[in-house]
Each structure stands twice: as structure tokens, then as C-alpha cells.
Length: 504
Image 1 (cartoon, rainbow, N blue to C red):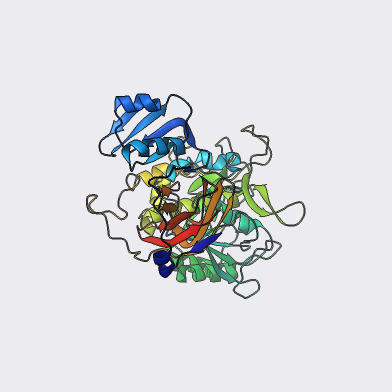
Image 2 (tube, rainbow, N blue to C red):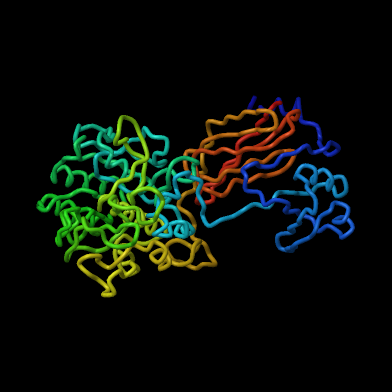
């Protein structure tokens, strides 16, 4: 049972010291421990290493800790007990596997499109936090298990209300590519999963709408905080109203991205063909422009759009773009492969969001994207591939190394963050089952996950900025645990909540 301790209860029932008791174990059990390796914040003598059957691999004076290898099987709890008997307070933790921005979404390995863009490397800069990307489409459904986290309900111009829920599936698929929940143990990943996703509905359940409502939606997005607008829709004909709306958005420093069209013509459709819009064509899993992708003089760039006629990468599925949306065979939500320039455009919109989150100005974004694109034709620009294939890593590299101050300035004097509000912790819950203890909570903004135990110190999550927090521990089933929850947002604002207690 999990309870918050009141101050008076703390005074009356302060926990007894555990200094003289054996530490029967507390270590995260997330499966990424390097077998037999421990990080210990004490330089052990050779005789102590011999007694404990440990071998010093490396010592770092700045860290004040070293890496030790156990020469015989031992767990963290047993090693901690043995060391505390001789040294008193000491920190022992398992060494942990680290990979480049890895995510645990089970279908991530089917997203060849993200591999093509090397999105794991791009995430070293950011995952879109702070950028707002509007999806003007059939709406967005949140009924699945893997919906975008930072969702903003815009407007529904089909039903003339404030509920832009999807009744078709197209918009939900597009939105997923931009900002699907990522690293949450479910489904798939998005390109900018920490971006704010604004849903605006202009297409009905059959995928039909009009340029007038598209124009209205563009103005709505521009006036309500969108940094980027994605338009995976269009036709062969322009309207002055829609063109005016695009110019209006551009004047408000909004980046507008649109699909070039799927008729295989040498003419980009509207709204992609308006000069202020970044027009996006599509490539398949082999990196070649697909036959359905419209080109022509208005084409700017290409991105993964898929080719459902073949399985070039040999993963057992046709080479579509995978996201969660309405099931094509029956009701409910499912993970479906789609193809089209509609699927290509959101990759570009999402990377535009990453650039803005990294400090690029809106009028820089198109030049950055096109100047860093991978030339597919050896001509610098062509009617089939524009300036080439979207390259997020090259684009972000123009803004500096990962972790550099956003928006320029002296690297030795980090810019003062505008965000001074600490995350709010709520929904604290937990349970115990034998030797397994789980603690959960939520925050009102993406933040890191940490638990500080009175008995054993601090245990950090993987450093990801998330809203739903969950940590598992292996514990002594007989022991009561006292702890504080800690979450830190992207701007460095920290909230500590507790003291909490978990009884046997």
C-alpha cells in the first residue's frame, strides 16, 4: 500500500536507522544491467578486492567512482551489504547498457523510414519539445494505445465544433508519424514525439473537404500558436483564398509543409505548389522516388512515403509507412501500413519542428532543409526529387552540436530558460508483489523520472522526458520503503514530491 506521510506522522513514527541491518536489495530490474559489472563510489584496496572477488577495471577521480568486475556471481544487494560492513556509507549500482537514443516501441524495427532518416541520431539534439505542429486533415483520434502525448484539440470545420476527432484514419496516421508516443513500450515511434500536436479537421469521413475550409484552418493554426502546419491534402487547382491563407501564415512566421500529390504527374498539386509552401514528394524503402509521387518545378524535397507494391527491405511486409490508426479490416485501432506523399510530408513537418525546437527561425527552416538534403540525382535539384532526400542529422548539425545553447549566444554562458515553472506531480500509485515493487506517477509536462529512497539513495530513469512515469525495483518483501519522487523538465525546473511510504 502506498501512502503520503504527513509531517506529524513523520515526527511520531520516524523510521529506524538501517545502518546495522543487512541490505536485502534494491536495484532496478529493467533488464539492461551489464552482467557482473558494478559502479562503486569508493576506491577499494587490492586486499578488499581480493576478499570480495572483485577486479578494478577503471577509476575516475572526477566521478569519484570506479568500474569493478565481479569474478564470481554476486548481486547488488549482497555486494552493498558486504561493503557497508567495512566502509559504512557506499553506493553500489549495476553498470547499465546505453545505446544511441534507443526506444522500446515493439514495432520500431518495422519503421524503415525512421532508419532511413537516422532519426535515433537526430534525437541527440531534441525530440521536438516546445514546437507546435498543426495537422490539417481528417482529424486525429486518441482512441488507440499509442496516441500522441502532447495533444492540442484545434477546431473541426466539418462539424463546426471543437472536437476534431478523426472519422477516416488518414489524419491519425499522419499525426502519428509526426508525434506518436515514443519509448513507451507500445507500438511505434514518431519523428518529433515531444512536440505539441494540434489537430484541425477539414476533411470528412470519406476524406473529402474544400479549399475554403483548408484556408480557414491554416489561419486558425497560424493564429493559435502553430510553428509548423502539415497539409497532406490537395488537388490540381489553386484558389486565391487558400493562397492568401498560406501567405498570411508565412507572415506570422509559420512553416507550411504539404504533400506534392500522388498522380505521378510532373506538376506539384496545391497547396504544395504555392511558393511559400515546402512541397514534399515520396521515396520508397530503397531510397528511390516512387512512381506515384508528383514532381515538377515546384518540388522542394522528398521523404519516406512508402511503396506498397513490394518488400525491398525483406522484413516480410510491404514497404509502407507504419503507424497506429483505424483498422482497414474491421473496427477499432490497429497498426497499418500506408503509402503516399501524404505520408512523406509529415516527416518533413516533424523535422521542421525539431529545427524550431533547436532554435532555428521559421524563415531559416526551408533553406536548412533543402541545403542539407541528400542529392539523389547528382544535379543539385531535379523535377523528380527536388533538392533531394530529407536529412535530419545534417539539418540539425547546421545549428551546432547536440546540447549547444539554443538560439546562439556564448556556450560558456547558457541562456536563461523562459520556462521557470516546475512540473506538477500527480496520480501517485504503487504496488508490491513479492520481491517486485512498482511506483507510478504522472507530470503535467514531459520530465525525467527519479526515485530517492531514504535508505538507499537516488535511482534515476533513462533520462527521457515523459509524462507517465514508472519504475520497477527488486526489494526485500519484508521491508517498508520511504521515498521521494523527483521530476525535472527540459528547462531544468525540478519538483520533489513526498515523503511517501510503501508498506510490505
